[in-house]
Length: 377
Image 1: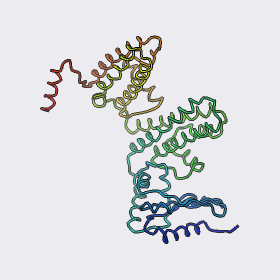
Image 2: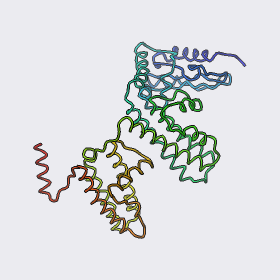
Image 3: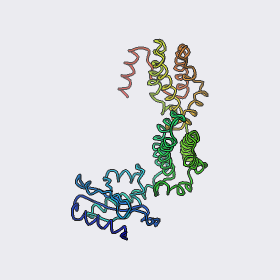
Image 4: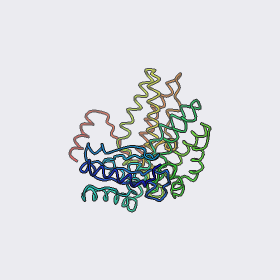
């Protein structure tokens, strides 16, 4: 078998660019094991390029040479910019790469500015922004958790492991973001890095081992659910340290009750018509939205998942707001209708006690007077 240096492969590709795509490719670079000194004899050279026009995409090529696979793949400038804002899980590719080809000084300056942006964000950007990104990234795991829970134990072990990967990937990315950093290495290589980050669930390594090693679907499902909730809790704890939650109903709840009443009306109308399906979904929707909103009023942050729902329900119980979901009964919709009516009355009273200005008018004349007064202001 021919012995070769992987950089001879990149040289051949760059020669091809210079010959056939000189104006169609802005940047070509490599990343991965050959940049951090961990390459083995089976390691490929991980490289990418940035095309400048549609023709440039034709420069991409996947191939096997001397038994080693290579993938010379394109990313556009827009994706590179998302990486620079840590909005793409592949940020490490851009941040730690080394250049092989540059079309012009302008391309080099644009590229270096993106790399500098990553460095500046990690050094100077407030932690709150990173927590927001971590929280947004974590939202993507819930559909996969639901699929695993709905499947019960009736699927193959491969199904649960594949679903678990769809949970692990964004969870680990969220942990990195909560630490104001990005994943530098590919899957299987970055776990030690993640385990050493200061902001993470204490049980992270143990839970990850369960997900990766267990052959029991219930254990995998439980570990995935625990991991998502634990990372959500870490994010909440970091927010509390940065800025202790300060309730502010007067500002945050403005306009909520007026809109929420429409949901409660829908619940009551469905009960009157004995439309159980609509009553069910409307009631669950209303209570879920109210729970999340109460947490927002108390903390200033929207949270998702089981923990947020539990926290919202505790606030509702302290405020003596009746639950809708707990009284849902297909054989007795009157109980749900009554609960919706009582919730409307008690929620309005609660909000007014918290200083919320609720726009409620008893006549058209009163509404017209309000409009005139608003205009004069």
